[in-house]
Image (cartoon, rainbow, N blue to C red; front, side, top):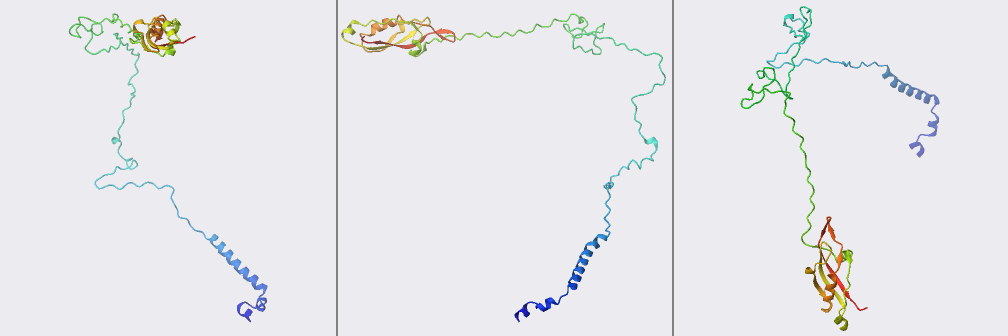
Length: 264
């Protein structure tokens, strides 16, 4: 009973004939083909679009007169046409001889431009003399021009050697020690041997441009004992050094010298 209420019964489904179904399919296919083919047989006229449309003359403003085009002015009288002058004019008669024009050469100094009303009897400009520049008293001879000035000679300044410094140049004891060429060892003082004194004597010395020790500027900075000082000063005064060069020039050098006294 439930099957009969909700779904079609099996007996009704079997009652359908195949011919009815085929006819239904044929009708639907015919309608679909008609809907497709009918629009193809209709002729629709497309709107005509001109490829070129001439420009229309602008509307004239009030109080302004437009000039008519050339086509409308073609009927104008020929007298109104303007004739342009031709640069070439045909001669009225053919000359029998060819005229030769000989230009008279004008000589003068370079850059001279002849002017009207100013010239000598030979066609040359008047020379510039004392007084009136256009006085004919001194004509200018183009063959006797003033000689050109000689080329200026540029003298290059010769570099001067830099002056040597007036004050001594300070150098370390290690650098000055490498220039030592003659060294005198000091004698151990007898009193220092008896008292068994040893140590170092530090002095400040000025080496001259010749490499000698300036005795007037030799002074003791530090000494282990006053018994050692005279012997150290006397020995250092006899030392010799190679001259110290600065920019190729010998200079005085100030340095420190240390003399050590030790027991053998």
